[in-house]
Image (cartoon, rainbow, N blue to C red; front, top):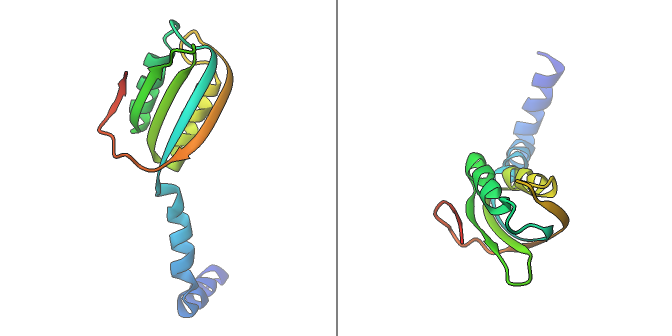
Length: 117
């Protein structure tokens, strides 16, 4: 028996195996985030680029221009994919010049698809 197999046997016996497997699945937990992106984010395909990336990642929610010149993005899905969307937004989607990204967590709203508002 290899040392890895021995360790797995010990973990299974002690009940730790289930705890480790649950921790690995935390990245699959659904999350919802609210983003306010400021800078040059209106009239530069920010919302459309964000929508396409969110759809590619399998996220749901929306992108919307705000009256103050900022853009709002609400996205929900797996944490790992949400993090990819955040990085995408920070890297100036479309022809935008994102200066600041504020992120807050929200309760899941169970959106259907990702749309531009």
